Length: 127
Image (cartoon, rainbow, N blue to C red; front, side, top):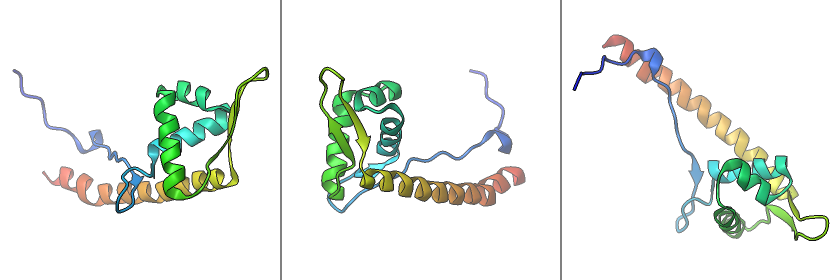
């Protein structure tokens, strides 16, 4: 097996996953549910959102129910299918969660990038 050459600092990038939990429940809200809410907002239905994200409808439905239960807030207004078709749209609370998490995540991402630049990039350049 041929050894790989050492990485250059310019080849490294920070990646992270972020989610919120309670003392008793993991994954109450995070990147996955945030992306799901964004897709519902864009697509107008849970079915179309799950198709666009490549996740199962059943998992998405369960994830949203868990988030709503733990957060104590309805995130979606659901309309059953029929002649005109069903749909879903974000409630005011859902829109607030979407916007707040977007800002929260953006600040965390900035902090991660700053720490990466300060500690990892400098470290890679010194070695």
